[in-house]
Image 1 (cartoon, one colour):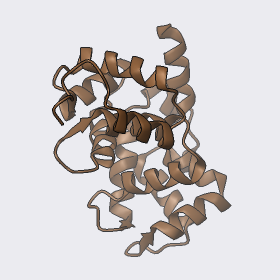
Image 2 (cartoon, rainbow, N blue to C red):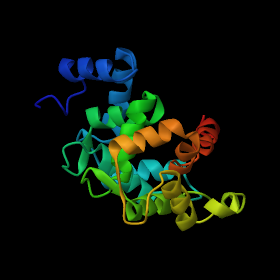
Image 3 (cartoon, helix red, strand yellow):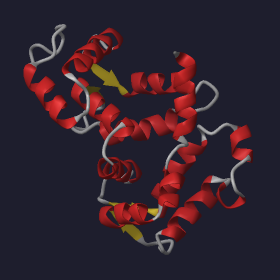
Image 4 (cartoon, rainbow, N blue to C red):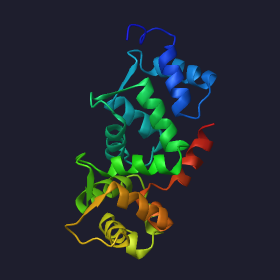
Length: 201
């Protein structure tokens, strides 16, 4: 990887990203320049990633959620994201196909990486999500999902699972495909993020 620090993106990575994401060659090159400005080493550390996240949520505490998102995209577990991992992350969370997004969501919730999701893992991610929902917004949540525990119970019930059961990737994806309500419950309300992004422009 001799050219990872230079200003040009390698042809191989460029071609691979064009195949695997919706970004054009120009967009990828522009993203790469700004990526290098932010991260001259060509890699984003977990701390830098948390910093990027916290800019989007100035009124909340996105640290725990950012750590889980980071873990789910650090494909080679080296504690950093390179440009390719970063762009695939961006693509998956913003415009990936539903199935890709659900595969990513599964890896987000599979905290210990053992290929199944347990109820405590769901609670861990939901608790991280709740740290990003302002107290004001939490007040407007329905009673059966206004705490991390209640929302976790609601999700687990939708899947028809007992407390000690595990959820496989297939069950997870199929359950969400068959019930849009689960999808709403497992994710951070993206509308808020979109509004914040508009404000930034």
